[in-house]
Image (cartoon, rainbow, N blue to C red; front, side, top):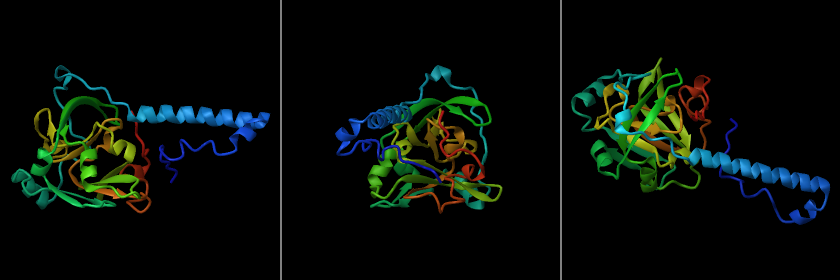
Length: 245
């Protein structure tokens, strides 16, 4: 897999002795190319950390459709749904100092962010909804990522065609201020068809990255040994891992 952390090496293009290299025409060309690469990398990083557009309540779509899995076809999920997800747990583990097991009530008591954003599906449809939940970064800070952690994997309760759904992001998207664990849509508890009781909102990426029916968050150093090694259910089947919009 050819994944690169945008934060690694951006400031290391010029090392000691560059002054001598620059004295030759070839050396000057190399340094000019390195400087140009650095500017492009900075622009790319800035684009990935920019905020997605947010809308007004007057812009809300009259209907926010479900897509992909619209429920979890297990007795355990049906029982949890009937009980209002009182016993649902979100497990946070992997490369963290302090593994967490959070109830839905724990998650509602954390500092909350509400954002009205547009959901863009790879199938070509869009909808605008209001999402509420804590920022993923808040939870990761509480768990304490270890230095080896490079990716965050989202574990889900639903299955498609016999395989458990999962997704992943790098730390840039994980700590983006609009990356939240949503428990409410348009001011109401998250509907079953939209991923109740918890789903990810990763506003700078297409809809298949927004994992639903969330049960776990795992910090990992590599995605190679997870699923088929491509970083997500649909990525394992040919979709792009970074699905920026």
